[in-house]
Image (tube, rainbow, N blue to C red; front, side, top):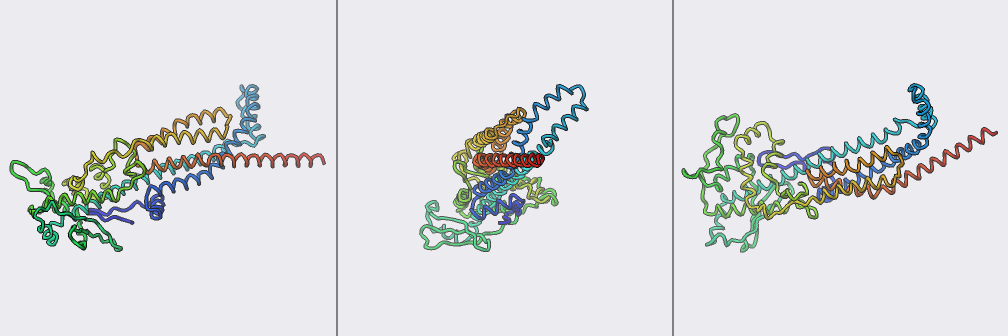
Length: 446
């Protein structure tokens, strides 16, 4: 799906590097959460290959530093008063042990830059994917809601309702279908009917058109002693180039307005739950795993996300009339937000912090570094990385939290193997070096 046509705009699906990979994975397995898990595994396995080289350089550097330390301390005592001579003797020791400051730092620097680039670009991409899916879900709910309200204009449907002495006893199912060409249909079936009736969706081009339908069948006209708070701001119609001129819409009572309004609310709610993507205890993976967060999007979130898709004229229209905000109140009217519960319990945040610490601890334990400076830096990372992971999982989409946790699990699983490979590699290098030294000595004897 490259785009979602809505009542006001076209929502273009994020199509960056990471988004394209995620969309391809989602197309293969059906859910974004599985796409994120698969991506996390692939990314961390690839990084483990770089990590082998980085660990080899670090372990080799640590070994050389341990050998050079006594000699460096000795010249420091002997030539400490002459910086030029001290530097000369230091360089001689570096040359003796084939030590390069740049060569020892470069792999670690490259690895760090790559990890930071992947971290922040993937975070931004997953947040973009989450926002898009929240907005597209709402926009489809809004379109569905409006099309159910339009049943007030469907003579066949109204006549069918008139057959009931009490319309509240009418039992019917209503659903939304999409054919292979992308056309949407409203399908309804009364309990007594043998076949369902299919009606093609009405296309709404602007939020103004949807709001006119609401004023026609849902929003009852104001009375002198009770102003209608849902009416558009009359100041918005003063400037024709800043807003849409509001035509007079007369409220029509089909005698079934309230029944159809509740039907529209329930249909929008059913669509939400049918298309909602959850994972384990998390009800909405596009939002943070937090007990202070509702799985349902808020009005401010929807309006904020949609701003980036508005044209300049559309922004002015919305700023003056707030159609989006007014329509939102009707679309989500059928939700009992208190009954929806919370979206999580900070479990992902806790897991991300714990696994981040454990992966660092395991890596350093297996490396067995005796370098004091390196040990000090490692202990700092024990706090820095878990805090960073905690902040991002606490504040942003659960998709990114799952990516971080799966990534750390892969790191813990691969660290023993990568460390073993590095140690074998260094052992082989030392063996070759010894053989080379023996050959050189034998040659000199001859």
